[in-house]
Length: 301
Ligand code: KPL
Image (tube, rainbow, N blue to C red; front, side):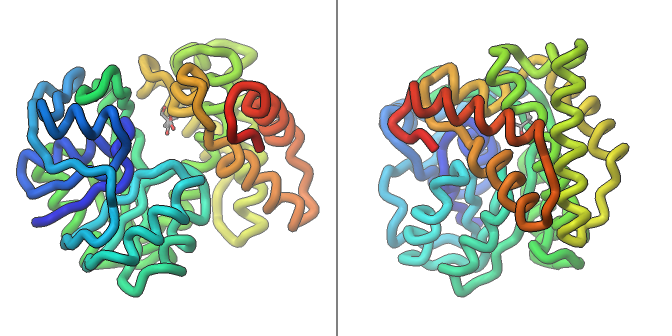
């Protein structure tokens, strides 16, 4: 199968690298990582120990493949969609944080867009090298819910490449559940500068759980059946399973990069306002991270 992975950050490089042992993969990303992959290949360490040689490019326009896996940061989804629209694909799969990425892709693409979530821990240690810090799971399916034979096939393709993946019929609920987990874990770890495992302690864990519960309230107002207790315990499960990880938002802060605060807590805040729901913890986290971004990056919200 020909696969293009749009977004060769830590997760995209991990998924693309693993798929690359079985399939013809092209990674689309930025230098110096892409230059390093082109010259010396991609090493995957940690849970895996592999060296692969996928194609790699900084120009994602005009490519052709069976499958596009989109792993760009949510604020780059629109740009990725425009590039994808210049190529030819059978299907696109979004495996991104935040909410609404699939809609953005669908507005530009005339082929099916599937939704996905991933809980793998990954870190780009240096150009050409991705460290898998936690074996997680990829869950994917039709973006509006229901069964999809294409999703079943892609899950089987991922599984054959050593990625724990399954196709599910309830992606809208899964996306909100993942949003709730990210709304708690990501900003709290980024602001306190700690690994996910530190959220096993009080009080940071309670702040993370409360942000998740606020998110579940907004999800229910949007017609998604997501219980408070489900997201509370999900935060705890993900903290345990990814204890060694630096969350993606903490990694962004450590590197002085723009974070996904706007697409995660900011999006929750916006939708909550639309329903007249108060989400004080999400508002506080978005405000604090927003202040950090304005001071430390060129992309302050
Ligand atoms: O998705 C994640 C992220 O860091 O963005 C979690 C699940 C919190 C793992 O770190």
